[in-house]
Length: 294
Ligand SMILES: O=C(O)CCC(=O)C(=O)O
Ligand SMILES: [Fe+2]
Image (cartoon, rainbow, N blue to C red; front, side, top):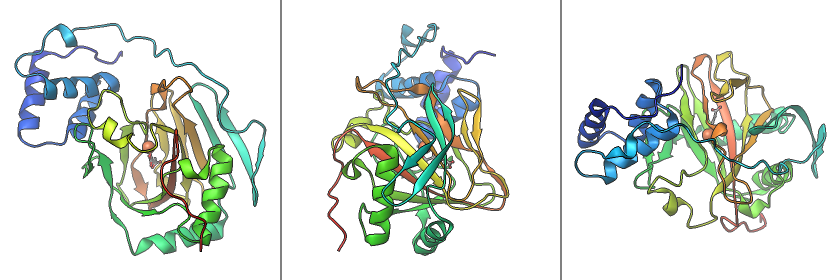
C-alpha cells in the first residue's frame, strides 16, 4: 500500500495536542511513519504544525510524491573488490548503486573491536538525537541505546582508526565527526531516520554551521549479534546483518547538495543478545580540529 501523503484534520489536531503535551517532534514523526505516513511528509507535517498557527492551509493536501531527482555521481567510496588502506585491506562484499551502499569486511580486527568496547563500556550515556526543531541533542524514546564519543585523533589507537576509516570513506580525516560507539541491549533499536540534517528542519542550520552537511556514514559492527539488530534500509528492503569487524557504508549528499532520501535507515530491535557499533559521519568540509596524536 502507498504511503500517506496528505494530512487529515484529525492528525493535525493530534500533532498539535502532542506538541502541547511536550512530546519530542521526532517521536511524533516516528509514530506517523508507523501509521504509514511517508517519512519525509511526516517530518514536513510536524514542522508545519510547529510553524503555522491555526488550521493548516492547502499546504498538506495530497500531492503526488515527487521523484527525488537525486543525481548519482561517481561514488566517493573507492571502486574495486578490495580497498587498500595504509594499514589494512578491506574487502567489499556487496555494493548497491541506488542509493550508494556497500557492505565491507575486515574494517576492524577482532582485537580493535574488543578494545573499543573496553574503552567505551565505563562511559556510556543514553543516546541523543538532534531535535528537528531546536537543533539540540535530546534523549528520544525511539532511540534505545547508550553511546559515547572519541574525539578525532584522541590517542594513537583512535588516530589509527580515524586514518583508516578516512581512507575507506575517501574523505579527509578533518571532515569526520568523532567516532561514536553505541550499545543496544536486548530490545534496543534505532527507528528509521536520515543521517543528514533535513533542510526542512529549523534545527538543521545550527548543526551545519560547522562543517556543512553530512555526506556519508560508516557503521562498523563490534560484535556478532545473536538475533535481530540488523541495519535496515526500508525504502529498498535491505537488511545488513551485523558481523564483528564488518561495516555498512552509505552516502547521501552529492556535489550539488542534493540529499538521497533512499538512505532512510535504522537499527532493527535486538531480539537476543546485545549489539555494539561504532559510527563515523563525514561532513562536506573540515569539521573540527584534528591535531596529530601526542
Ligand atoms: O544500529 C544501526 O545498525 C544503525 C545505526 C545508525 O543508524 C547510526 O548510528 O546513525
Ligand atoms: Fe543513522
